[in-house]
Figure 1 (cartoon, rainbow, N blue to C red):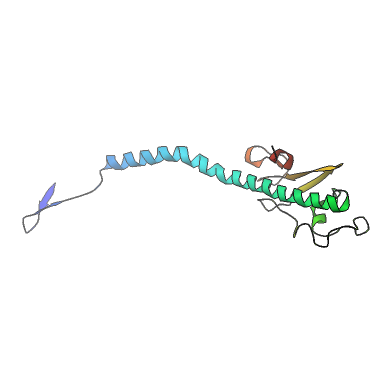
Figure 2 (figure 1 turned 120 degrees about the vertical axis):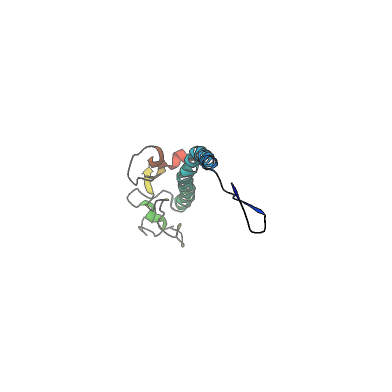
Length: 148
């Protein structure tokens, strides 16, 4: 409906009807249904990819350690052996600079696990749940699986 103003011109009210608002809300809901799950999972995937990248850098440091010292650090010495020489008698050829500046942590702030297997090793992050095991986004991340 319109009202006549003093000067004779009609004033038209402009507003959205309830039906128009419901249609817009419906469209936004449909879009959210398809977009939100993809965006929510992207953050977890990015963290997992970052852990694999970090493990690649650690692997290079371990290989440098092995070239200098003829062996990888023992499991008990862990990745701390890349920061400071754990035993000057055992590793006399240890680099004058450390192989890493600090003990590495994963995307969730937890130390990356190191396990020596004879002449090789495995790097492990326990993932978002911060404990061994887990499924889906909480699944443990193994360096050997990152490389595939």
